[in-house]
Amino acid sequence: MLPLLNVILVGWLLTSGAAAPAATAEPSPSRLLIVAQSGVLRVCTTGDYPPYTLRGDDGAYTGVDITLATELATVLHAVPQWIPTTWSTLAADFVAHCDLAVGGISDTAERRQVADFSIPISTDGKTPVTRRADGDAYSTIAAINQPGVRVIVNPGGTNEKFARANFPDANLIVWPDNLTIYEQLEQGNADVFVTDSVEGRYRGRTHPDLQVLHPDHPFDSAPKAYLLPRGDLAFDTVVNTWLQAQLATGRPTQLLDTWIS
Picture (cartoon, rainbow, N blue to C red):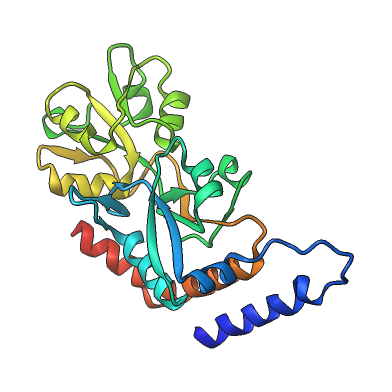
């Protein structure tokens, strides 16, 4: 991997402003060069979406994507700098402050307007999380989309987008903290939370009174990937080549299994 990184970096230098005519404006430097010079990989992450990203009370980050991003930084001879963000401000924060964004991010057309995406790391979809005592009462979109059904959702991401599109007749509760939504379900302040099945599986382990319904048959399907700088071929190629190697060894799946099992 390191020789490949060096080849790509040298190739970029040869085709950048250093080889361009003097009258031509120099292009913006690749993040690959910036990271190499600074020794820092700036990573946007929400810290509220286990098992992908979780910020502890001490400010430390853990999770599948946190581990992978740390290992990627090592390959780039850098250390990760975690940049806090929210689902509502993810795209803007990434463009303004970060080289990479990780943490169970769905590949959407809206996000592609401002950034590129890496190759998919996994595929997931929306499934209901409910109290075990409610059985399968909220197992379908039709059952959830009823007056009086309290659907809780965190703001700004694909969970809210899915809920607004599919549950117009339900009572939508926008809860600001994704980490405490599950307590709201346990305490009976909401009936159902529709989120990605991987998160539901993880929360079913940490909240035994809750269950995730039909996680192997979600309502929809979307790839999970990393946000990358738009149009930065050198940086994108290095990240995607490294990710392809991780996928070939099963590293992301191994990390997910460790968190969920």
